[in-house]
Image (cartoon, rainbow, N blue to C red):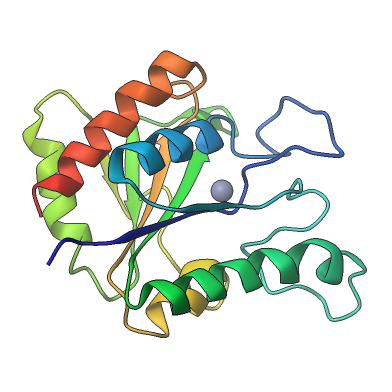
Length: 192
Ligand SMILES: [Zn+2]
């Protein structure tokens, strides 16, 4: 049976912040997600607000006034898509800053996982098989259900096949970079 993919992009937007800075949103992630959605013929759901307003990948404070406006509609849309699609492969798309605290990150792309590595391991192998890509495996980030929200709640809890990926922002800052990386990633997924 053909796999059906669902794409989500927690940090797609810098709306309301108007800041071209990695603390406001995941630079390039929305563009890569759009390209991947085309290549995989998959629906994609994007958060509509900067994580400086509310981080859609964190459990919100109960009294945060942005929950009803931004957090709940985003996660309700993901829930509805998961229910409608019946066991989609869940793809969570992020981007990471090329350096943090003065330390450069060597990984052009990185997969984050928790204990279920059914897709992580073969996709890591496929990315490495290109031979010219530096790939991170749970570095710089893993998935921690005590910290992260989206993949644990929508995918891990249900036992859905899933991948969480970080593209380095200098690689996906331009449209051509977004297309190149979306194509590489779709190829890697295509080897499953
Ligand atoms: Zn992110």
